[in-house]
Image 1 (spheres, rainbow, N blue to C red):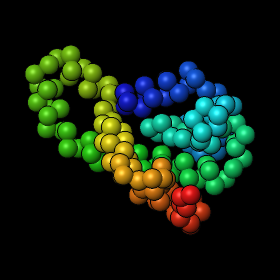
Image 2 (cartoon, helix red, strand yellow):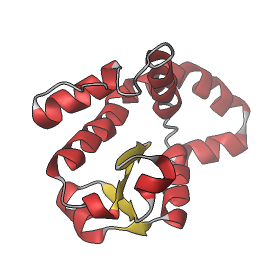
Image 3 (cartoon, rainbow, N blue to C red):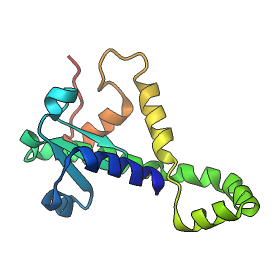
Image 4 (cartoon, rainbow, N blue to C red):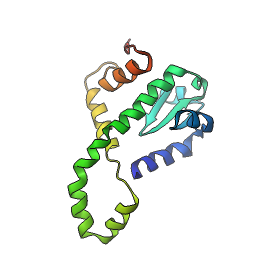
Length: 148
């Protein structure tokens, strides 16, 4: 999964790996001490990698909310099947691509999911006023995101 690998590499180069949290959740978790100041956020998901502010490592609902975003990333995996026909055509025409395709699984859902997220936020006055945030908040604490 080259997209996930690239996102993980970028995240790992700028943050601290949380080994125990990653074992507890089964997902890659990183932390950063100045996240709240830098991005005005307590946590975010970058593809299928979570970055959380160091001061909020014990916030159960924050972890739950961000885990739902990771699950959303995996839920859009079906999008990759739409690219099977063009990939097969490309595979038959290129020996180099044929070798690469045997080693990598192209996770194109990240691009589509991010586009859908931005589309949902196109006219909203509140960042959290979209389907993806509502779903994450509903499953994290059975509540609804309240925008100021």
